[in-house]
Image (cartoon, rainbow, N blue to C red; front, top):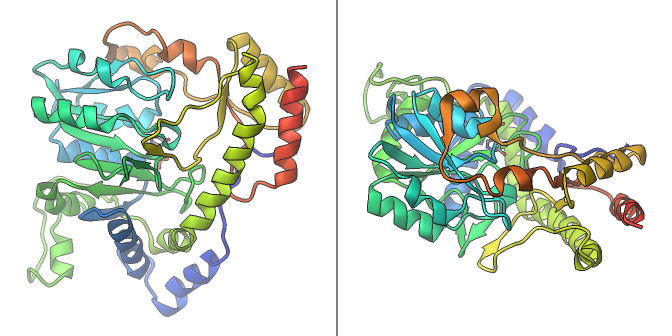
Length: 376
Ligand SMILES: *Cc1c(COP(=O)(O)O)cnc(C)c1O
């Protein structure tokens, strides 16, 4: 069976974990490796503050606290996303307001956002699906005019850009995931990137159980205490050591994924030209990170048939999000503003092909031959 995903492993991970144990003798959070990862993001992506977190889910939860989401507030986001995008805000008592996606990128339709704004709206949460950017200029303009926070769910967007800017560094806050299914991993983990400097100090406090321990460790105060609400959002050094090995090889991982992505794209173009499938669309001003390669079949039935055919031929291909608004919790905690023209219908057609660092070229060829065989 060709796996859908294998977690990336570039070689130095074990050495760095050993260093954390034997040399640094530091396993809890915010040691040498965590600091190296934070600095890597800040320098590389030109952002004032990056902090590793225990997951992207937790980075989103921190964002909801930082944006002072209170019961009754509304948050605008697409329904075509992962549960954590909305749960983080629902936990603070927010009502989720979904708007439709664009069929070309599967991202939130920026032209539908403004109409969904009410006096209760507090934040817009764009999700950069498959590492392809949302239309951030338009979204930032709307947010500034209505005095709203923009929190980017850039879980899939590490190393991708919008008009040259790293995803996750454009809104007030950006959230990354280093889950084992993402481009760079630490098993479970994430990061919060904070562009809005007014939020930095509070972010450090929330992440450290509501204490000013970060200031204390920097020698800025002589004791630390409980100053705010918070939780334990800092990951272990062991996880940070694993991630740092991957960040050092970020280009290698990115190029390897892009190579596979481009092979899929070029080889399947013929089927698209024949009108049998649709391929992903990358707007000209976006560079993507090959987080995902998906194709869209004619309809739900065609997708089911293709997935089964691939499975019979030992290839694991999978569909993706079931729109959140139609789920049990979605009915309770959210509403859909406007018509669902594309969210449900486009999501039903989408199937993701195996794509991971180190996927062998021979396997890519076999997958392509099998897909072409299905359409003959
Ligand atoms: C993976 C993912 C998350 C959650 O990331 P975790 O690190 O597993 O918490 C959130 N949003 C999106 C869009 C994701 O793809």
